[in-house]
Length: 557
Figure 1 (cartoon, one colour):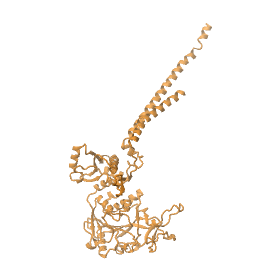
Figure 2: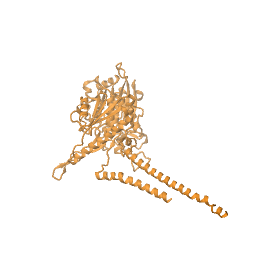
Figure 3: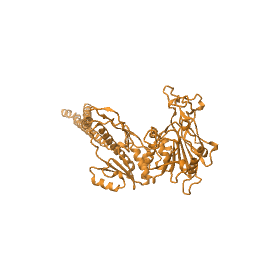
Figure 4: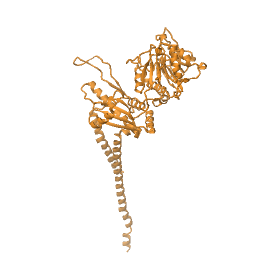
C-alpha cells in the first residue's frame, strides 16, 4: 500500500504539462491570426490609399502638388458659396475634341499645350463643382462621340456663333440665358509664341522656336466669366482722347489695349470721347477715363467733368511724371475745383541693397522710381481685396497727390488709396542727371515720408436726377500702372477693381484667382512603365516581405 501511494504522488504535476502545451499552441495560433489580420489590414490600407489617390476630388482636398493646381483662391470659394446662398445655378458645357496629329516639333508642342490645358481645366472644374454643389453643373461633351447630344446642345445655344459647326475645345458658361464662351487654350492660358528667328535647318530652310505654356489662368478666366454673368447690363466707359497721350488701341507695348480688352471681357462697353470738341460728357456714360494725358485740360473740359461729377458721374484720371516737362501738366484748374494738388517732382523710394547692413532701409538709384505700394487702404472696396491677399500694386514714374486741406471745396471728401511706406521722397528735376532727375537718396532724413500716389475724391451730387446716384467719384492714380509693357499684368486686379467699383458692380470687385505656372514633368512611356511595375509588383512584395519578417521574428521570440 505504501508503494502504491508513493507511485501516485506526482500525478498532479504530470497533468500540468499537456495543459501548458495546449496554452502555448493557442498563443501561437492567436499570434498567427493577428499576423494574418495585420497583413490583410496592410493590403487593405494600401489598396484604399491607391484608390483614393486616383480621385481628383481628394487631390483637391489634400493638395500637395508643387503648383497647387487643385487649389483655388479664397475669393473663388466665396463666389461659389454666394451662388449656393443666392440659389443661382451656373452651368458649364465643355466641348473637347481630339488632340490634332503632330508631325513637326512645333505642332507637337502646340498639341502638348492643348492637352495640358484640357487636363488642368478638367481638374479645375472638378474643384468648382465640389465647392459649388448643386449650384455648379458641368456637362462634358466629346464632339467625336456624342453626336446627337452635341447637336442638341448647340441648337439650344444657337445664338452663340462660337459654338456652331465643328467648334471644339471651348467652354460655354451659362447663368440663366446669359452666356460666355472661353476658348482653349487662348482664353485660359498665357502662351509664349516667340517671334520668328532665322534658324538654318538641315535642308537649308528656316524654322521658328516652339510655343511654350507660361502659365494657366483658368481660375481667373472662369471666375471672371461667372461674375460678369451675374451682373446685368453693359456699362459704357468713355476713354478721352485728344491730349497727346499714348495709344489706347494699338497692339504695342506703349499702348493701353490690354486694359481696354480686359474691361471688354468684364462686360464693359468701350467708347471714345473728344472732350474738348464735345464740351460735355454723354448722358449714357457710366464712367469717363483719362489715361496719361500730356496736355492740360481747358476750362471747357474742366467744366464738363465737374458738372458730370456733380450729377453723380464717375471719373478716372491716371497722370504720369515725365522727364519732358511739358508732358507733366498739373491739372490746376481741375484740382482747384475738386481739392487736390499734384507734385512736380518724381516720387521715389529707397531700394533694398544686399551690400548694406540688414537693418538698413536701402538706398537710392536707378530703380528708386519703381514703387511697390504696400500702403493700401484696407477698408476701401477697391483695395480691400488686394490688402487681404497682400497683392501690392507696382507703379513707375509717379507724382505725389495731396489734399487741398483747409481749401477743400464744399461737398468734396479726400481719401488716400495707395501710398508708399515711410521711406518715400520727392526727387527734383536735374537736367545734368542722365534721366533728367536726381535719384540719389537724400542726406536729410526729414525728406522721407509716406507719399500718396492714389486717392479717391467723393463729390456730393448736387445736380443728380432723383433716382440717380447721390455721390460722384474721382479716382486719381499717379504713375505708369496699366501700360501693356509690363504694367497691366502686375496691376490688372487694381485696374478692373477701379472701374467695377466706379459703376457699382460690387460682385466684380475682387482679386482674380491663382496663377498656375506650368512646370510639370512629362514622364516618357518607359518611366510610366517603371512606375506601374513598382506599384503593382514591388509595393505588394515589400509588404509581403515585411509580414514574413515579422512572422519569423515572433517565432524566434
